[in-house]
Length: 222
Image 1 (cartoon, one colour):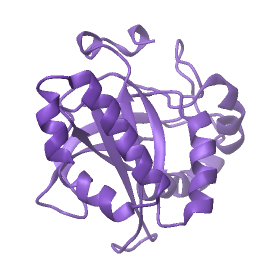
Image 2 (tube, helix red, strand yellow):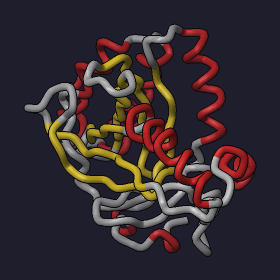
Image 3 (cartoon, one colour):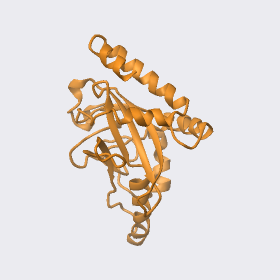
Image 4 (tube, helix red, strand yellow):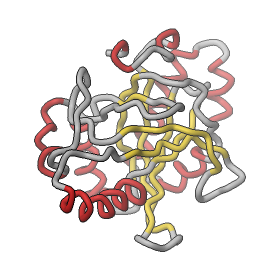
């Protein structure tokens, strides 16, 4: 299938994007994590530096019922992601209606002016070796937790737990398919304080911003 899409990409790239999106979506609905893993290993690090994308949950080993709930919830949670590969940029992956979630979970953390949603974390995207397959290169979507404005003792108690959640349960590895225009992402969550991988969850992105806007600052990509 990948070979056929690659050949079609030379003549009709827009059609290939749509077919790839539909194909991955069907694999996710079928819960075919094995095939998604094989496709992931065919991908390459993202060629674009920044941009606005729409995300969609695909599948996990938890079963179809859990996957259906996650698909429903995350479709509403993810309104867009912005990817950068240099430094801290202070960006959000949540819409305004979910502000109360961040305020409940992370009281007092800062929200930079001019950014929508609750800006709890900064994203950092760098090219690294795949955590499960070191010979395979991926784009790592990592997180940076700001200092926050909570009382000092609350922050001291909360930060280790929050960092474990962010780094071990939500850190994503991404690869580009069909020229990098469709992104397949994997979250290889692991058991706390060990190196043994516990589960692998997949989701995907579609670029929404034109390629010419990929390097513009966050505030310009709406």
